[in-house]
Length: 489
Image (cartoon, rainbow, N blue to C red; front, side, top):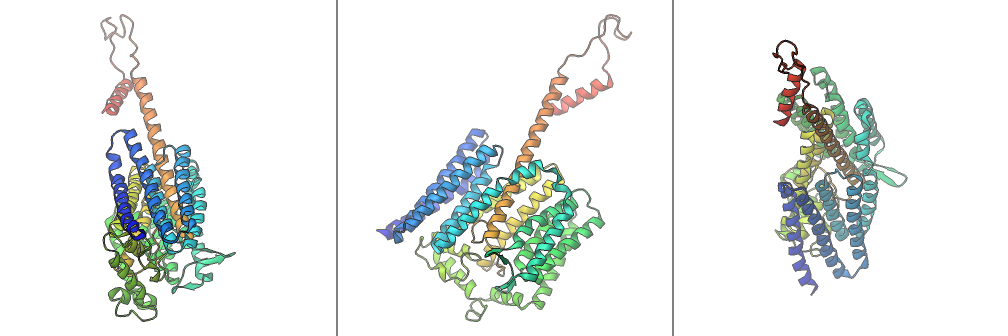
């Protein structure tokens, strides 16, 4: 009976995920605001029901009440987040909130399958991050001094990276994090945010050659420290974010092409300098050939075996063997999802990630101030490329980089900083709504003023009206009339 329930449940989970994903791209085709809200509410129901089915399957496999308690915690988390956003930030983008909750719930689910203890710990960290995130939109909207702290962002970012380089222990061949009071911090995740703010502050007004050179030197220093620490995945994310922001700020393709050429050259140099890089390239070329070697292709090969074993519909929750993949809860969680929930579910999850990125780009394109526009574009580039690196490394499309899947993989620093990134985007979205309302208010005031009847001259007037009360319009009135016509258009 349990096998039958598991087999049926995997198709139901996929169906619910497909409906949710489809609504992510169709919600804004609804012209009526109330219709859009109804779609967003249905997404919440789909999310909660999908998790109910999944956690019920996990419970039936071992009769562990902790699994149902975990579902209760996830249910409460999603409901509370939705209510608080609607109460505190009525102008917020609820599609981004829904997608964030969906990706977090997928992470909780697959971690509950892999290691329940880590799932509980991840949940606690996410709650802390979510509490912090409710403060961020207020800061983005109200604290105008943010754009003037450019060099503070750069100095703090470089200092944090230097601390990791000097004090971090080597893990997996790289210096990634330090431990303080029993708690591990990966500072490069936080520096992703300060780095974007620094570049945006430098390029918000002046995009001359001198300013570009200075910004490039500081950005290259960030990347160089990460390369020396052998945190190559984060180095690539920083590099791509900078190239995107530089092109958006300057609109000059030659800068972007020069950056890509420099990045390519740096990658070749890194290949010859670091054995760590050469080993990953060898594994990428043929993981089976170095399957048994230390630091060889075992991890990548097992990930590929898991993806292929799952097929389109997956083996069902609890029916696969994802735990045999090394570091499956971090770098290779995408392989675990493919193995047990199927490639269709995994593709839908990636489309949800794409929906988040498209919303971020939309926010960036609508911002009127260059500083905020660049922040949104930089954070969006970091998020999208991190997803690409994770999925590409797991599927052997590119060499493995050791990057986690945002909001899904296990890791406190990564999940908290990603939540804060989404909160910053929410703050920018709300700021854009505020600007739109203020512009509309000014337009209405102009319309009211322009509708006042012009003063008439008394009979005899100015000698041009022939005593009929007509007078020629002044220059000011002509300008006002032309402005009204433009606004109506």
